[in-house]
Length: 251
Length: 252
Image 1 (cartoon, rainbow over the protein chains, first blue to last red):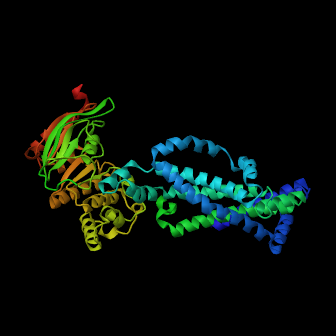
Image 2: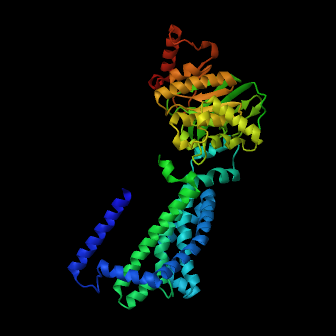
Image 3: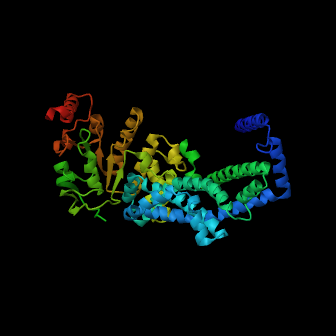
Protein backbone atom coordinates (compact mmCIF):
# COMPACT_ATOMS: atom_id res chain seq x y z
CA UNK A 1 0.00 0.00 0.00
CA UNK A 2 2.80 2.40 0.92
CA UNK A 3 4.59 1.58 -2.32
CA UNK A 4 1.39 2.26 -4.22
CA UNK A 5 1.02 5.72 -2.69
CA UNK A 6 4.69 6.48 -3.31
CA UNK A 7 4.23 5.43 -6.95
CA UNK A 8 1.16 7.62 -7.19
CA UNK A 9 3.18 10.56 -5.88
CA UNK A 10 5.88 10.03 -8.49
CA UNK A 11 3.27 9.75 -11.26
CA UNK A 12 1.64 13.02 -10.20
CA UNK A 13 4.96 14.86 -10.10
CA UNK A 14 5.89 13.61 -13.58
CA UNK A 15 2.46 14.56 -14.92
CA UNK A 16 2.71 18.10 -13.50
CA UNK A 17 6.24 18.37 -14.86
CA UNK A 18 5.02 17.36 -18.33
CA UNK A 19 2.17 19.85 -18.18
CA UNK A 20 4.55 22.63 -17.20
CA UNK A 21 6.92 21.65 -20.01
CA UNK A 22 4.01 21.77 -22.45
CA UNK A 23 3.03 25.21 -21.21
CA UNK A 24 6.56 26.56 -21.39
CA UNK A 25 7.20 24.75 -24.69
CA UNK A 26 10.93 25.48 -24.68
CA UNK A 27 12.73 22.15 -24.21
CA UNK A 28 16.11 23.80 -24.05
CA UNK A 29 15.16 25.82 -20.97
CA UNK A 30 12.72 23.45 -19.33
CA UNK A 31 13.26 19.90 -20.60
CA UNK A 32 10.23 17.57 -20.38
CA UNK A 33 10.46 14.23 -18.53
CA UNK A 34 11.04 12.24 -21.73
CA UNK A 35 14.13 14.23 -22.72
CA UNK A 36 15.56 14.09 -19.21
CA UNK A 37 14.85 10.36 -19.06
CA UNK A 38 16.74 9.83 -22.32
CA UNK A 39 19.65 11.90 -21.04
CA UNK A 40 19.70 9.99 -17.74
CA UNK A 41 19.65 6.73 -19.69
CA UNK A 42 22.65 7.85 -21.75
CA UNK A 43 24.52 8.87 -18.62
CA UNK A 44 23.82 5.57 -16.94
CA UNK A 45 24.75 3.49 -19.99
CA UNK A 46 27.95 5.44 -20.59
CA UNK A 47 28.81 4.96 -16.92
CA UNK A 48 29.28 8.66 -16.27
CA UNK A 49 26.35 8.74 -13.84
CA UNK A 50 27.78 5.94 -11.70
CA UNK A 51 31.22 7.54 -11.85
CA UNK A 52 29.89 10.90 -10.71
CA UNK A 53 27.63 9.55 -8.00
CA UNK A 54 30.41 7.18 -6.91
CA UNK A 55 32.93 10.02 -6.63
CA UNK A 56 30.55 12.16 -4.57
CA UNK A 57 29.61 9.20 -2.42
CA UNK A 58 33.26 8.35 -1.81
CA UNK A 59 34.04 11.92 -0.65
CA UNK A 60 30.99 11.86 1.61
CA UNK A 61 31.88 8.53 3.20
CA UNK A 62 35.48 9.58 3.76
CA UNK A 63 34.32 12.77 5.46
CA UNK A 64 31.79 10.85 7.57
CA UNK A 65 34.57 8.53 8.68
CA UNK A 66 36.46 11.51 10.11
CA UNK A 67 33.62 13.83 11.07
CA UNK A 68 31.31 11.43 12.91
CA UNK A 69 33.83 10.16 15.49
CA UNK A 70 35.19 13.68 15.93
CA UNK A 71 31.70 15.08 16.45
CA UNK A 72 30.77 12.39 18.97
CA UNK A 73 34.00 12.80 20.90
CA UNK A 74 33.81 16.57 21.16
CA UNK A 75 30.04 16.50 21.73
CA UNK A 76 30.34 14.10 24.65
CA UNK A 77 33.25 16.03 26.14
CA UNK A 78 31.50 19.39 26.16
CA UNK A 79 28.16 17.87 27.09
CA UNK A 80 29.69 16.16 30.12
CA UNK A 81 31.96 18.96 31.44
CA UNK A 82 29.98 22.14 32.17
CA UNK A 83 33.16 24.26 32.06
CA UNK A 84 34.07 23.00 28.59
CA UNK A 85 30.51 23.64 27.54
CA UNK A 86 30.54 27.21 28.87
CA UNK A 87 33.75 27.92 26.97
CA UNK A 88 32.77 26.32 23.67
CA UNK A 89 29.05 27.08 23.55
CA UNK A 90 29.20 30.59 21.97
CA UNK A 91 31.59 29.34 19.28
CA UNK A 92 29.27 26.48 18.42
CA UNK A 93 26.39 28.93 18.07
CA UNK A 94 28.53 31.08 15.81
CA UNK A 95 29.93 28.33 13.62
CA UNK A 96 26.52 26.74 13.34
CA UNK A 97 25.36 29.89 11.58
CA UNK A 98 28.30 29.81 9.15
CA UNK A 99 27.55 27.44 6.26
CA UNK A 100 30.39 25.42 4.76
CA UNK A 101 29.98 27.40 1.52
CA UNK A 102 30.99 30.58 3.33
CA UNK A 103 34.29 28.92 4.19
CA UNK A 104 35.07 28.03 0.58
CA UNK A 105 37.38 31.05 0.04
CA UNK A 106 39.45 30.07 3.06
CA UNK A 107 39.48 26.43 2.16
CA UNK A 108 40.78 27.41 -1.30
CA UNK A 109 43.38 29.77 0.16
CA UNK A 110 44.65 27.28 2.70
CA UNK A 111 44.29 24.00 0.88
CA UNK A 112 44.01 25.07 -2.73
CA UNK A 113 41.83 23.44 -5.39
CA UNK A 114 42.45 20.02 -3.94
CA UNK A 115 40.61 16.96 -2.74
CA UNK A 116 41.62 17.86 0.84
CA UNK A 117 39.94 21.21 0.50
CA UNK A 118 36.64 19.60 -0.48
CA UNK A 119 36.87 16.94 2.21
CA UNK A 120 37.68 19.61 4.79
CA UNK A 121 34.45 21.46 4.03
CA UNK A 122 32.50 18.24 4.40
CA UNK A 123 34.24 17.31 7.64
CA UNK A 124 33.47 20.77 9.02
CA UNK A 125 29.75 20.37 8.35
CA UNK A 126 29.52 16.79 9.56
CA UNK A 127 31.55 17.30 12.73
CA UNK A 128 29.56 20.35 13.74
CA UNK A 129 26.20 18.68 13.09
CA UNK A 130 27.04 15.48 14.97
CA UNK A 131 28.65 17.48 17.77
CA UNK A 132 25.59 19.64 18.36
CA UNK A 133 23.23 16.69 18.44
CA UNK A 134 25.51 14.62 20.69
CA UNK A 135 26.03 17.49 23.09
CA UNK A 136 22.27 17.99 23.39
CA UNK A 137 21.84 14.25 23.94
CA UNK A 138 24.38 14.20 26.76
CA UNK A 139 22.91 17.24 28.45
CA UNK A 140 19.39 15.82 28.22
CA UNK A 141 20.21 12.62 30.10
CA UNK A 142 17.71 12.68 32.93
CA UNK A 143 19.08 13.34 36.41
CA UNK A 144 16.93 10.46 37.61
CA UNK A 145 18.96 8.04 35.48
CA UNK A 146 22.23 9.27 36.97
CA UNK A 147 20.79 9.08 40.48
CA UNK A 148 19.45 5.59 39.83
CA UNK A 149 22.98 4.75 38.69
CA UNK A 150 24.43 6.05 41.96
CA UNK A 151 22.09 3.79 43.93
CA UNK A 152 23.25 0.90 41.76
CA UNK A 153 26.91 1.67 42.44
CA UNK A 154 27.62 3.32 39.08
CA UNK A 155 29.06 6.83 39.18
CA UNK A 156 31.69 9.08 37.61
CA UNK A 157 33.41 7.81 34.47
CA UNK A 158 31.55 4.52 34.79
CA UNK A 159 28.26 6.42 34.60
CA UNK A 160 29.52 8.17 31.48
CA UNK A 161 30.01 4.86 29.69
CA UNK A 162 27.18 2.81 31.17
CA UNK A 163 24.44 5.46 31.37
CA UNK A 164 25.21 8.68 29.51
CA UNK A 165 26.58 7.24 26.27
CA UNK A 166 23.83 4.66 25.73
CA UNK A 167 21.22 7.28 26.67
CA UNK A 168 22.37 9.65 23.97
CA UNK A 169 22.78 7.12 21.15
CA UNK A 170 19.37 8.09 19.68
CA UNK A 171 20.51 11.73 19.63
CA UNK A 172 23.79 10.72 17.97
CA UNK A 173 21.85 8.73 15.36
CA UNK A 174 19.72 11.77 14.57
CA UNK A 175 22.88 13.86 14.32
CA UNK A 176 24.50 11.48 11.83
CA UNK A 177 21.34 11.31 9.78
CA UNK A 178 21.13 15.08 9.57
CA UNK A 179 24.85 15.22 8.76
CA UNK A 180 24.39 12.83 5.84
CA UNK A 181 21.66 15.06 4.40
CA UNK A 182 23.73 18.20 4.81
CA UNK A 183 26.77 16.32 3.50
CA UNK A 184 25.06 15.66 0.18
CA UNK A 185 24.42 19.38 -0.19
CA UNK A 186 27.95 20.39 0.74
CA UNK A 187 29.68 17.76 -1.39
CA UNK A 188 27.96 19.09 -4.51
CA UNK A 189 28.81 22.68 -3.67
CA UNK A 190 32.43 21.73 -2.99
CA UNK A 191 32.63 19.83 -6.28
CA UNK A 192 31.46 22.87 -8.22
CA UNK A 193 34.83 24.48 -7.51
CA UNK A 194 37.40 22.84 -9.69
CA UNK A 195 36.68 19.19 -9.03
CA UNK A 196 37.23 16.72 -11.83
CA UNK A 197 34.58 14.25 -10.81
CA UNK A 198 31.35 14.05 -8.85
CA UNK A 199 27.80 15.22 -9.27
CA UNK A 200 28.78 18.85 -8.63
CA UNK A 201 31.38 18.65 -11.37
CA UNK A 202 28.81 17.15 -13.74
CA UNK A 203 26.39 19.98 -12.99
CA UNK A 204 28.99 22.59 -13.86
CA UNK A 205 29.88 20.69 -17.06
CA UNK A 206 26.25 20.42 -18.12
CA UNK A 207 25.68 24.10 -17.39
CA UNK A 208 28.66 25.20 -19.51
CA UNK A 209 27.35 23.10 -22.39
CA UNK A 210 23.82 24.34 -21.80
CA UNK A 211 22.75 20.70 -21.50
CA UNK A 212 19.69 21.29 -19.34
CA UNK A 213 18.53 17.69 -19.66
CA UNK A 214 21.79 16.40 -18.17
CA UNK A 215 21.54 19.12 -15.52
CA UNK A 216 18.07 17.98 -14.52
CA UNK A 217 19.03 14.29 -14.70
CA UNK A 218 22.02 14.93 -12.42
CA UNK A 219 19.88 16.81 -9.92
CA UNK A 220 17.38 13.96 -9.82
CA UNK A 221 20.27 11.51 -9.43
CA UNK A 222 21.53 13.56 -6.53
CA UNK A 223 18.11 13.54 -4.87
CA UNK A 224 17.90 9.79 -5.28
CA UNK A 225 21.36 9.41 -3.78
CA UNK A 226 20.29 11.38 -0.71
CA UNK A 227 17.12 9.31 -0.38
CA UNK A 228 19.02 6.06 -0.78
CA UNK A 229 21.66 7.05 1.77
CA UNK A 230 18.99 7.99 4.29
CA UNK A 231 17.17 4.68 3.83
CA UNK A 232 20.42 2.73 3.99
CA UNK A 233 21.37 4.50 7.21
CA UNK A 234 17.96 3.83 8.74
CA UNK A 235 18.22 0.18 7.77
CA UNK A 236 21.72 -0.09 9.22
CA UNK A 237 20.55 1.38 12.53
CA UNK A 238 17.53 -0.94 12.67
CA UNK A 239 19.75 -3.94 11.98
CA UNK A 240 22.87 -3.15 13.96
CA UNK A 241 21.36 -1.23 16.88
CA UNK A 242 17.85 -2.61 17.36
CA UNK A 243 17.96 -1.57 21.03
CA UNK A 244 18.03 2.06 20.00
CA UNK A 245 15.57 1.77 17.16
CA UNK A 246 13.07 4.61 17.23
CA UNK A 247 10.45 2.32 15.71
CA UNK A 248 10.29 0.05 18.74
CA UNK A 249 10.46 3.01 21.10
CA UNK A 250 7.29 4.54 19.75
CA UNK A 251 5.26 1.44 20.44
CA UNK B 1 30.19 1.28 52.36
CA UNK B 2 28.02 1.66 55.43
CA UNK B 3 28.07 -1.12 57.97
CA UNK B 4 25.17 -3.44 57.50
CA UNK B 5 24.89 -3.90 61.25
CA UNK B 6 22.82 -0.89 62.16
CA UNK B 7 19.64 -1.43 64.15
CA UNK B 8 18.21 2.06 64.15
CA UNK B 9 17.87 4.79 61.61
CA UNK B 10 17.97 8.33 62.94
CA UNK B 11 17.16 11.68 61.40
CA UNK B 12 18.61 14.10 63.95
CA UNK B 13 17.55 17.71 63.85
CA UNK B 14 17.83 17.88 60.09
CA UNK B 15 17.22 21.16 58.27
CA UNK B 16 17.61 21.75 54.59
CA UNK B 17 17.41 24.95 52.60
CA UNK B 18 18.14 25.72 49.00
CA UNK B 19 19.82 29.11 49.07
CA UNK B 20 17.77 31.18 51.47
CA UNK B 21 14.65 29.11 50.92
CA UNK B 22 14.01 26.71 53.81
CA UNK B 23 12.54 23.36 52.85
CA UNK B 24 12.85 21.27 56.00
CA UNK B 25 13.07 22.64 59.51
CA UNK B 26 14.61 20.54 62.31
CA UNK B 27 13.23 17.14 61.41
CA UNK B 28 13.87 14.76 64.27
CA UNK B 29 12.85 11.13 63.88
CA UNK B 30 14.13 7.70 64.77
CA UNK B 31 13.07 4.30 63.46
CA UNK B 32 13.97 0.68 64.02
CA UNK B 33 15.48 -1.41 61.29
CA UNK B 34 12.74 -3.17 59.35
CA UNK B 35 10.17 -0.39 59.77
CA UNK B 36 7.82 0.53 56.98
CA UNK B 37 7.86 4.31 57.19
CA UNK B 38 5.30 6.32 55.27
CA UNK B 39 5.78 10.06 54.97
CA UNK B 40 2.69 12.08 54.20
CA UNK B 41 2.59 15.76 53.46
CA UNK B 42 0.96 18.33 51.26
CA UNK B 43 2.60 19.08 47.93
CA UNK B 44 5.74 21.11 48.36
CA UNK B 45 6.20 20.06 51.98
CA UNK B 46 9.62 18.63 51.33
CA UNK B 47 8.80 14.91 51.45
CA UNK B 48 10.92 14.20 48.42
CA UNK B 49 13.72 16.41 49.71
CA UNK B 50 13.79 14.34 52.88
CA UNK B 51 14.04 11.22 50.75
CA UNK B 52 16.87 12.77 48.71
CA UNK B 53 18.74 13.48 51.95
CA UNK B 54 18.39 9.87 53.11
CA UNK B 55 19.40 8.64 49.66
CA UNK B 56 22.49 10.84 49.91
CA UNK B 57 21.71 12.78 46.74
CA UNK B 58 21.66 15.93 48.86
CA UNK B 59 23.37 16.85 52.13
CA UNK B 60 21.46 18.43 55.03
CA UNK B 61 22.14 22.10 55.73
CA UNK B 62 22.35 21.17 59.40
CA UNK B 63 21.77 18.05 61.45
CA UNK B 64 22.63 14.50 60.41
CA UNK B 65 21.06 11.31 59.17
CA UNK B 66 22.58 8.13 60.55
CA UNK B 67 22.26 4.43 60.05
CA UNK B 68 23.37 3.16 63.42
CA UNK B 69 26.34 5.36 64.26
CA UNK B 70 27.37 6.01 60.70
CA UNK B 71 26.37 9.24 59.03
CA UNK B 72 25.01 9.19 55.49
CA UNK B 73 27.27 11.30 53.29
CA UNK B 74 26.59 10.07 49.79
CA UNK B 75 24.39 7.76 47.74
CA UNK B 76 25.15 4.08 47.93
CA UNK B 77 23.83 0.65 47.02
CA UNK B 78 22.69 0.02 50.61
CA UNK B 79 19.85 2.53 50.07
CA UNK B 80 18.20 2.06 46.71
CA UNK B 81 15.67 4.61 45.49
CA UNK B 82 12.54 3.63 43.56
CA UNK B 83 11.57 6.72 41.58
CA UNK B 84 8.06 7.76 40.64
CA UNK B 85 9.15 8.63 37.10
CA UNK B 86 9.79 5.03 36.16
CA UNK B 87 10.16 5.71 32.43
CA UNK B 88 13.20 7.82 33.19
CA UNK B 89 14.48 5.60 35.96
CA UNK B 90 14.79 2.45 33.85
CA UNK B 91 17.35 2.09 31.09
CA UNK B 92 15.32 1.79 27.87
CA UNK B 93 18.14 0.15 25.88
CA UNK B 94 18.32 -2.76 28.33
CA UNK B 95 15.90 -5.64 28.72
CA UNK B 96 14.14 -6.34 32.00
CA UNK B 97 16.87 -8.82 32.93
CA UNK B 98 19.67 -6.44 31.98
CA UNK B 99 18.07 -3.61 33.93
CA UNK B 100 17.90 -5.79 37.03
CA UNK B 101 21.50 -6.96 36.51
CA UNK B 102 22.78 -3.41 36.05
CA UNK B 103 24.06 -2.91 39.59
CA UNK B 104 25.33 -6.44 40.19
CA UNK B 105 27.37 -6.97 37.03
CA UNK B 106 30.50 -7.68 39.07
CA UNK B 107 29.00 -10.68 40.84
CA UNK B 108 29.96 -14.16 39.59
CA UNK B 109 27.69 -15.26 36.79
CA UNK B 110 25.90 -18.02 38.66
CA UNK B 111 25.12 -15.88 41.68
CA UNK B 112 24.01 -13.02 39.48
CA UNK B 113 21.61 -15.17 37.51
CA UNK B 114 20.23 -16.71 40.65
CA UNK B 115 19.62 -13.31 42.20
CA UNK B 116 17.96 -11.93 39.08
CA UNK B 117 15.69 -14.95 38.87
CA UNK B 118 14.77 -14.63 42.53
CA UNK B 119 13.89 -10.94 42.51
CA UNK B 120 11.99 -11.18 39.24
CA UNK B 121 10.03 -14.04 40.77
CA UNK B 122 9.31 -11.86 43.80
CA UNK B 123 7.75 -9.13 41.67
CA UNK B 124 5.97 -11.59 39.34
CA UNK B 125 7.95 -10.72 36.25
CA UNK B 126 9.64 -14.07 35.64
CA UNK B 127 7.89 -14.36 32.26
CA UNK B 128 8.97 -11.00 30.95
CA UNK B 129 12.74 -11.08 31.38
CA UNK B 130 13.63 -10.44 27.75
CA UNK B 131 11.21 -7.60 27.11
CA UNK B 132 12.28 -3.99 26.84
CA UNK B 133 10.76 -1.38 29.18
CA UNK B 134 8.87 0.18 26.28
CA UNK B 135 6.97 -3.09 25.91
CA UNK B 136 5.72 -3.03 29.51
CA UNK B 137 2.80 -1.30 31.23
CA UNK B 138 3.42 1.33 33.89
CA UNK B 139 2.78 -1.12 36.70
CA UNK B 140 5.16 -3.70 35.23
CA UNK B 141 7.85 -1.06 34.76
CA UNK B 142 7.51 -0.15 38.42
CA UNK B 143 7.92 -3.84 39.32
CA UNK B 144 11.13 -3.91 37.28
CA UNK B 145 12.40 -0.92 39.21
CA UNK B 146 11.59 -2.58 42.52
CA UNK B 147 13.29 -5.80 41.37
CA UNK B 148 16.35 -3.83 40.28
CA UNK B 149 16.53 -2.31 43.75
CA UNK B 150 16.04 -5.63 45.52
CA UNK B 151 18.79 -7.21 43.42
CA UNK B 152 21.27 -4.93 45.22
CA UNK B 153 20.15 -6.52 48.51
CA UNK B 154 19.95 -3.08 50.09
CA UNK B 155 19.30 -2.33 53.74
CA UNK B 156 16.67 0.16 52.77
CA UNK B 157 14.30 0.86 49.90
CA UNK B 158 13.49 4.54 49.42
CA UNK B 159 10.28 4.91 47.45
CA UNK B 160 9.20 8.31 46.16
CA UNK B 161 5.46 8.10 45.41
CA UNK B 162 6.18 4.96 43.40
CA UNK B 163 2.55 4.18 42.63
CA UNK B 164 1.41 7.77 42.17
CA UNK B 165 1.27 7.60 38.39
CA UNK B 166 -0.54 4.25 38.20
CA UNK B 167 -4.24 3.49 37.77
CA UNK B 168 -6.24 2.59 40.88
CA UNK B 169 -6.43 -1.16 40.28
CA UNK B 170 -2.73 -1.54 39.48
CA UNK B 171 -1.87 0.61 42.46
CA UNK B 172 -3.96 -1.56 44.80
CA UNK B 173 -2.28 -4.70 43.48
CA UNK B 174 1.21 -3.28 43.81
CA UNK B 175 0.46 -2.06 47.33
CA UNK B 176 -0.55 -5.54 48.47
CA UNK B 177 2.44 -7.06 46.71
CA UNK B 178 4.80 -4.55 48.27
CA UNK B 179 3.37 -5.31 51.69
CA UNK B 180 4.02 -9.04 51.32
CA UNK B 181 7.44 -8.29 49.87
CA UNK B 182 8.23 -6.25 52.96
CA UNK B 183 6.94 -8.99 55.24
CA UNK B 184 9.03 -11.52 53.33
CA UNK B 185 12.30 -9.60 53.22
CA UNK B 186 12.12 -7.46 56.35
CA UNK B 187 13.71 -4.52 54.53
CA UNK B 188 13.42 -1.05 55.94
CA UNK B 189 11.18 0.90 53.59
CA UNK B 190 10.93 4.68 53.49
CA UNK B 191 7.88 5.49 51.44
CA UNK B 192 6.76 8.96 50.38
CA UNK B 193 3.11 9.34 49.46
CA UNK B 194 0.18 11.73 49.64
CA UNK B 195 -2.37 8.94 49.84
CA UNK B 196 -3.62 8.43 53.41
CA UNK B 197 -5.16 5.02 52.78
CA UNK B 198 -1.96 3.83 51.16
CA UNK B 199 -0.04 4.93 54.24
CA UNK B 200 -2.53 3.23 56.61
CA UNK B 201 -2.36 0.01 54.61
CA UNK B 202 1.40 -0.19 54.40
CA UNK B 203 3.03 1.67 57.24
CA UNK B 204 4.28 0.70 60.65
CA UNK B 205 5.26 4.35 61.16
CA UNK B 206 3.47 7.34 59.69
CA UNK B 207 5.04 10.78 59.61
CA UNK B 208 3.09 13.84 58.50
CA UNK B 209 5.04 16.90 57.45
CA UNK B 210 3.55 20.38 57.74
CA UNK B 211 3.13 22.74 54.83
CA UNK B 212 6.37 24.33 53.71
CA UNK B 213 8.42 26.41 53.52
CA UNK B 214 10.35 25.11 56.45
CA UNK B 215 8.28 21.96 56.91
CA UNK B 216 8.33 20.31 60.33
CA UNK B 217 7.08 17.02 61.70
CA UNK B 218 3.39 17.58 62.38
CA UNK B 219 2.37 14.06 63.35
CA UNK B 220 4.34 10.94 64.07
CA UNK B 221 2.19 7.88 64.50
CA UNK B 222 3.91 4.82 65.85
CA UNK B 223 3.52 1.15 65.09
CA UNK B 224 0.95 0.21 67.79
CA UNK B 225 -1.22 3.24 67.06
CA UNK B 226 -1.98 2.29 63.46
CA UNK B 227 -5.29 0.43 63.18
CA UNK B 228 -5.16 -2.47 60.73
CA UNK B 229 -8.85 -3.12 60.08
CA UNK B 230 -10.55 -0.49 57.90
CA UNK B 231 -13.96 -1.50 59.31
CA UNK B 232 -13.28 -0.09 62.75
CA UNK B 233 -13.98 3.19 64.48
CA UNK B 234 -10.27 3.49 65.30
CA UNK B 235 -9.38 3.29 61.63
CA UNK B 236 -11.85 5.99 60.67
CA UNK B 237 -10.71 8.14 63.56
CA UNK B 238 -7.08 7.78 62.50
CA UNK B 239 -7.95 8.56 58.93
CA UNK B 240 -9.76 11.71 60.02
CA UNK B 241 -6.81 12.69 62.20
CA UNK B 242 -4.43 12.29 59.26
CA UNK B 243 -6.77 14.18 56.94
CA UNK B 244 -6.85 17.02 59.43
CA UNK B 245 -3.07 16.94 59.74
CA UNK B 246 -2.77 17.14 55.97
CA UNK B 247 -5.28 19.95 55.66
CA UNK B 248 -3.28 22.83 54.30
CA UNK B 249 -5.67 25.54 55.55
CA UNK B 250 -5.73 24.49 59.16
CA UNK B 251 -2.32 25.90 59.96
CA UNK B 252 -3.09 29.34 58.66
